[in-house]
Image (tube, rainbow, N blue to C red; front, side):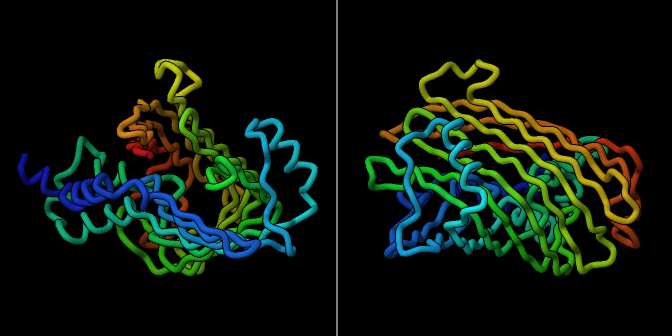
Length: 313
């Protein structure tokens, strides 16, 4: 058992450091004229930093309302009126933690299994983050929400997102791969003391330079809601849902279908809101998304579990 637990050392170290971060360092934003510079670290899977650049002399508009339907109507009406250019750097700590666990403690990593499932791989490899880092460019229409007209606490956008990276993660191992992703997205992300929610609807494609990784297109939906003033046993509140389907281009085949759902427990501590929980799901690997050596050992119609710890503040 100690050897088994030792394989989780890099992940435990990450969560310890993550939990010790001061709340002020989790989210940062500042105005640079009509532009907005920001950095966010509110999820163990994702750290981002970037710059919202207004395409006009005026700042990106701020809405007085935070109603989802009102925001969607606004974004739909302004689909062909781009007002923002965004450059963002993303780093994925937990997927990198899985790579570190396999590279630094290979023997213990192999022992971290329950049956045929490697627990570390299941926790660290998300359906969305199969790379260590990425550089993204967004072009489209965006609006901000601001708390007391001082601090940005959310945004909504609709437009084209282009992303680049040079590595791919499979089975907690890094493989060289210059890849590009092109995505049409509608996204809404709002935080607050009483309620937080994030929704995303997207369709896109990913092209790989590594010939052993197949090019594909996908459809995705994500909804995540946290209510600090509502009971956590509600089916809708304090819950998340994620659906995704991937299909290869040549030949046209379904590669995988994924579904993930979870519940969380929100609480307050020292005037700060937190939420922790667990999200579970499965990926149905219908056809092989890899070829050559990377495709070895694939079992058609295999089911792979998804375990995603949730920690947000």
